Amino acid sequence: MAKEKPAIAPAYKIYGFFLLGLTTAIAFRALIVLDHVQPTWVRPVWYFGVLGNFVFFFHRFKISEKRKRAVAEYQLIEKIESGAVLSPEDQEVMVYILRSIKLSPEHINYLTIFLFSLLAIALDLALSFFVNT
Image 1: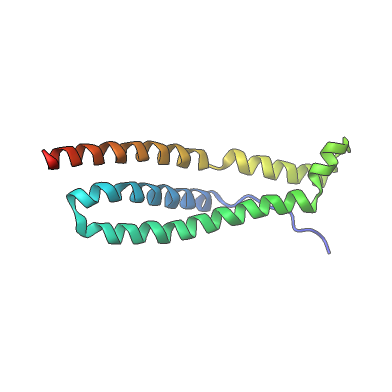
Image 2: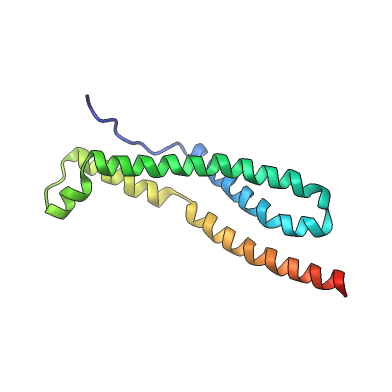
């Protein structure tokens, strides 16, 4: 039975899941502010964040498993460590893995989470200070 060659997802799927991950990350950081300014929105935003993360991280899990499976099925680590010449098929799989990493906008998601976490902390401290003074 021939191995199924991995392929990169279409752009709409890549950026759709990226947008989902981004909005859920922002939603969780917004909770602390919503608690101060509009408490009735806390639960709906929390549910959106949890359900969105459920879908987003399952998708990321599947991508990670797909990459690992390709490395294992084609024995890429062993071939590279031994200095073996990669077959054209092996090279295609390596290009898939490297291209999927390069095309993934996940680094922007990480940066956004970092920045919105700082902003959420700053806003919470500011709102707590002004409410309590």
